[in-house]
Amino acid sequence: MRKRLFQFLNVSILKTLYFNFKCLPFSQSIKIPVIVYRKTEIVSLKGTIKIKGKVKTGMIQFNNINDEFIGSHYWRRIEIHGEVIFNGKIDFGAGSVLFVRKCGKIEFGNNIIIGGKTKILCEENIKIGNNVRIAHESQIMDTNFHYLRSINDGNVEKCTKLVIIGSNNWIGNRTSIMKGTKTPDFLVVGSNSLLNKDYTNLKIYSIIAGVPAKLLSEGFERIFDLNEEKIYNEKFNRIL
Image (cartoon, rainbow, N blue to C red; front, side):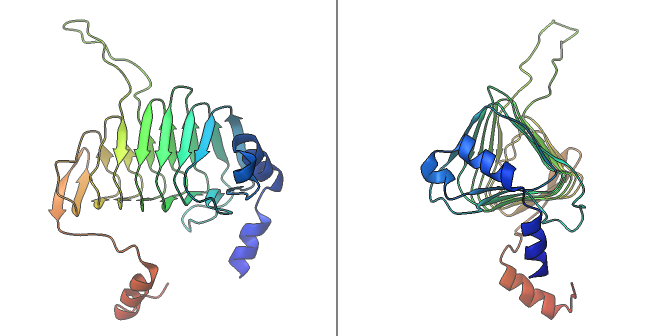
């Protein structure tokens, strides 16, 4: 109860109303699906924001205080010039950044948690599936921001490329997901990893890690169900 009260008191009512009624049709905005917390810098909402499916109050939480490893004093940043599509519940942690350029398009699935101080920078196209957990201080970018020229033949390649994160992925903290990354469903990524290619040739229920990330093991999945997790906490005498 105390935690919920603390969260409620940290909601920015003005920013919440501004976001909903500026970006969404009245039939959706009246339900207040988007909650924006204090210490959130809204740089731009010039882009297009869409919610697909059933709209519920508070289904999209910008910078909820949900990460015990990140303090609530960090400022957050929202800058949307392109298109953002939400397909369900999502919670952005404290200190997170969502930046979408004018030609960028990012689509979020349902039941996603973005850890604190995570940066999502979209210049072209990013797709994130359902039931995804991205731990704190990670970054997702579909661009190198700058160009490289080959000294041998003078060739300059495109600096952006589609990023796809499969459903039921668990991304460890401080992971960098770079342009051209594609992951299969039910993937576990170890902390401090670098993803920069297509991994969809891997079997589902794989574990990868490293710089760059490589296959470590197969046949494992993260337990997402909180009730089941509670059973194992009791079994292993884990006191939280």
